[in-house]
Length: 400
Image 1 (cartoon, rainbow, N blue to C red):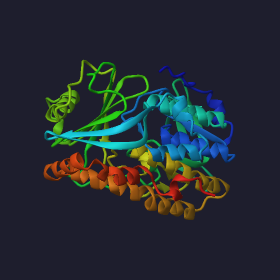
Image 2: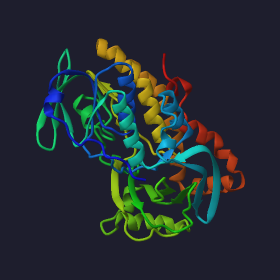
Image 3: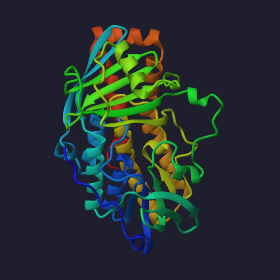
């Protein structure tokens, strides 16, 4: 599916000519959604991203029912359909010669390139200023505003905003500068979680048909594969760091797990990727700082399975927006504490369910037992899939 490009740069004078109500750094689902919502609430918003759009990201490319609920709450319920999203009906888990087909109710497959571009376009239509190819760092925070340095392809701009939303992903540089980044790591902290890998293939075995999330489970991690709206095969893996040895390529590591689970091999070289992510177990000290709020992956992350991460990002952005709107009128540390409580109560609760599933899949004896159970009783997983992908109504719905 062809997606129109977004403007790649802007006159620095436009960024420097005013004090913006909100600067959102990072234009993934969380950043674009919070920019959209704040623009609807009457804020002057600048949305910045270091990459050119549209762009591909490591992601499972799945929109859960919870993510779609969050879009409907923002008046964007038809966005997936307009972007060509395909329905997903089955989560096919396979490992140790066991297969389980878990029904998916209402999930959709949509590439991040198409989805993120559509959200950015929606934010621009509400009045947000979008700037790509903009490397942004937080310089200083005063009693009146935050001051950022924006490096554009041909110039550097100094941007002033009353509030900054850090939506720049795992181990957010903006949040780190604001004092809320990741805690000091123990020497073996990197072994505690998995790393993410992703790629896109234009050719793939017919077994990888549309409408199914294919999930290969092995001792070194798991690999998800899904056909997106343009017919390509999106591959996203969560692997133990030990799976990527000095002489092991990402494709070799992923292929090993596919082979162990009796899935067809990947064909040829990827059209996109391979790309990696930092450790998928990430929990910052705080979800903000002085005049800074973190949302999406920047606020914390665990391994998702069937679109939960997108649901958390979109619903979290919808809940954060009215808190930020009040902070624009007058900053108070109490508003940051309000966001922290809301995040723990809702997104944090949903993430704990996925953390438990990741713990189970990381233990061969338990994962074999779970697969055997699901092989015989696939509907047993339905409550987990529903709860993990759908934060409580207090988060998913638009606050009053």
